[in-house]
Amino acid sequence: MGLNRKMGLNRNTIRIVTSALLLTALALAQSPDPKALLHEAVNQLRGPAMVATYTLTVERPGRSKRYVLRIYTDGDRRALIQVIEPRREAGQAFLMLGEDIWIYNPRLGRVLRLPPSGKSDRFLGSDVSYADLAGRDLEDDYEVRLEPAGEPGRLTLVLTPKPRAPTPWGRVVLQIEAASKLPRRIVYYDQRGQPVKEIEMRKVARIAEDRYLVTETLVVDRVREGYRTVFEVSNWRIGAVPDRCFTPTALERGCER
Image 1 (cartoon, one colour):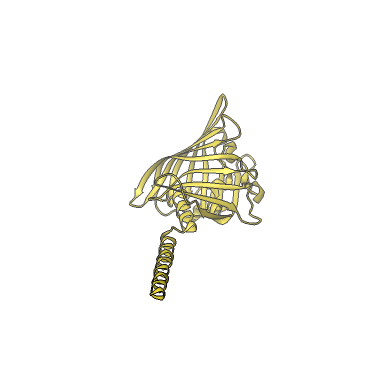
Image 2 (spheres, one colour):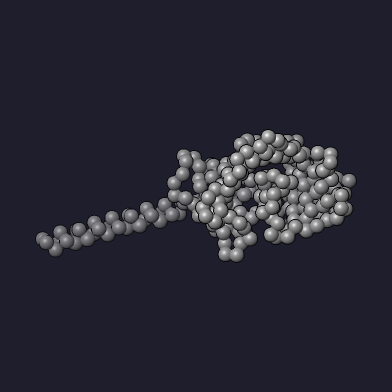
């Protein structure tokens, strides 16, 4: 009698442990892959292959400056950016080919390659760095993990630099929509854990059933009050961009001639 009761208890214990293990395995199987989430978030952030007009407004205490840019991108690691306005600075161009960034200065009539250490520099004096524009640094330079809890309908990815990664940040936190995988907020922290820069995706346009284009972005300097940059996208034309747009020749001559 006592032996039967003990065997029954053992069987119940085994069933409970087995059920718990199965539930844990099922939860892990259903948990989204952080690397896959980051890849999709970067895809949404980069946008599709297209030609578009970007208006860049750099705000500083008591003043602001406005740039009009023409952007050609393959939606991945290649982009050509031409300055259209203001007239005094028109003709400047920037070519991004993966890790390489090239700059054309019409006054000097020269094409210069940006050194790796310059990727954290401010693009046109704004609060946006060259690394922000360059492509997939968030994927290439960081390890990623998924925070277990966050706001309803959103997921939080925490990125920490890989060993010897060329980045000044100690940590980057992305908040993305769970359904669309669209990034809505990115916060950059320094090595001491203090927030330094925040990027908010304020407006989006739906361009396909499962694809979006960020049409207005606010970048805020969290250290210096009143330092902000606004990116606005307009007049976009989605579709393949010719390879000739992503060559050093296009920096000076453009790519639609």
